[in-house]
Length: 423
Image (tube, rainbow, N blue to C red; front, side, top):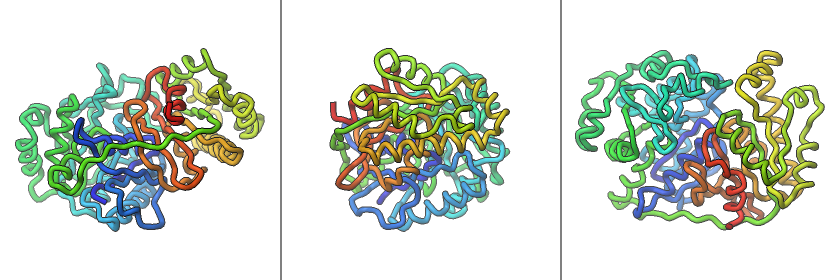
């Protein structure tokens, strides 16, 4: 294994996994496998990039650090030469963590003195300029992320955000230096910090910037960022002759289907509206879940009654309605109830024969794959930007697509199911 990735949620893991698998146009990428949690056995020797998916974004910082270090140890034992800590391209993190504490711990373990940090993902409109994160034409704190129910982002200046979370110095490399090319950028990175460990936020406005940054990061033991930071990492190993350039493909999976959605993002709500024009949709009332009126059996019954029609069940609501319910019942109780509901539903569906599952939302994706305990997923073709088709191993495989809330075109859900079937 050449590259090891520690991802703080399951959809983000699949996002960077497909980036590594795809590589640069015409060149190919690395043979990539996504692991659902920290494996208990060695990786297959053909795997060139391993992505360990954790559900650590919204847990206590101490727990996130412990899990991330354990994942790092496993990846190093597989021979990884470079570790990537992957977090969301909107830098989802409260003042208490977890991005800063995890980065600090990994930097210390890997003896990394200069740690590049870049969440930019231009293909999804996320860019970093003068240390400020933008979502399309809006600063992060005016993009809607300021209302996120778990990690509200109130400041677009990531230098200030990060400095509140880390015990290390925070630096910044501006876009004009990135624009000079990979070698000047590499030299700029090397000059930063002196003997002091420093976390370096590096601007990026487009994919060419990310390719430049990836090439400049060759040989660094630790890199952190969104999935875009991995654009040229496979290239570095291919030009050195340590990889040949892999072109991904996953066998299609037939069988019953289900769509489970727990995101409250505007993009996901628009996708649900589009889907219900042609397909059956069931809305879940969160209060009914909390009071026991709605359970997994009801969701399974609806999905199985509508087999062949791409049935979708969702708990999405407006940020305002979600906030109101959280204030009434408590954020942790609401999150746990929905995680248990979607996890139980997925287990019952698979036990009854469902073989294609599309999941919307990072927390929901984590709940579903944790409940199914699939172990490892082979990364296939990209369904939409940042969302690959994935298939579990074994004689009776499950095909999955895990979508972050803001990802995907309006017709994503039906198209994802068709892709998993090989259409």
